[in-house]
Image 1 (cartoon, rainbow, N blue to C red):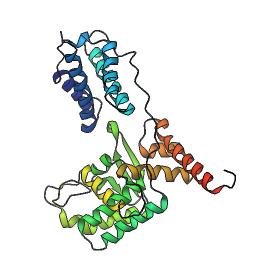
Image 2: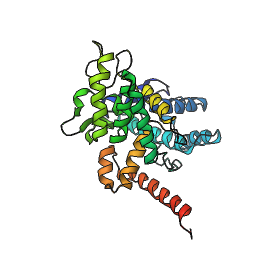
Image 3: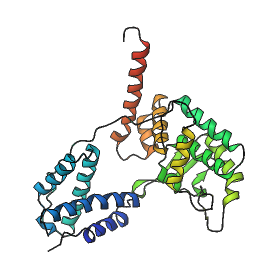
Image 4: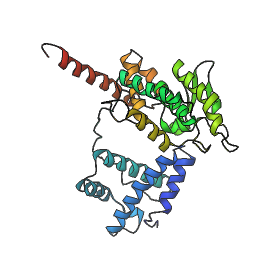
Amino acid sequence: MVPVDPVDPVRDFARHLGAERGQSVHTQRAYVGDLRNLMTFARDRGISDLSEVKLSDLRSWLAHQAEHGAARSTLARRAASARAFLRWATRTGLIDADPSLRLVAPQRVKTLPGVLKQDEISAVLDVAAVAADDRDAIHLRDRAILELLYASGIRVGELVGLDIDDLDFASNLVRVMGKGAKERTVPFGGPAANALQGWLRLGRPQVVTAGSGLALFLGRRGGRVDPRQVRSAVHQLVQHVPDAPDVGPHGLRHSAATHLLEGGADLRAVQEMLGHASLATTQIYTHVSVERLRRSYQQAHPRA
């Protein structure tokens, strides 16, 4: 008998995600939160053993959340968490049969991601460049971060994990460790290279310490920069551009992909650059471009 416990099986599963599937700590934490919610719901229904969980219980769990206002995206994620956990529990012998095989959650609503227009991106990068004119370490760092995020379309988690030797200035390439510990190489342009060199030459030496190691981007005290600091920097700089949507690092990733496709880049090349496992994930950016075209048509065509 395997007790329905909010800690042990879930923690074992989280360790499996990290050790065998290479999932990030953030992803593990999301799974654990979803599964603890499921375990609590099961106990409240009088279920004392994991093997007693049935498909009807899983459906009731999702319905209960929907009744309390959970978004479709949340329900879809939690259903996926339950399926992954119960599949693992079956494979490892914790339960005899997987009750989630016929579990269906609401489809996620595909919303168009927020993006900056090309002139808005230029304005944000100009703001960052002007701020960096004072040669303050953090201003130099933030300019380099924005330039690299937009130039490469990498995720904020990938950016903060970069080391100096991941940069190849001879070819303007950056080596990135993506989701699932998959490595890829992404190009960046001249402006990003100039900003990165300015940070390495003038900014990083101001804050580097004995404990900094090879971390590319550092905080004021010399430690590796964290995602929260990057998000804060991006939001603050975007706020200086009138009427620009308030986007974070992921918005710069969306913007880079959209502008590449608008400029004629091949969809599969963009997929490889972004590190998407599925081409379907990349295709949402084609919808962004089509939606922009539709708006422009309605505004400009005399017979729209």
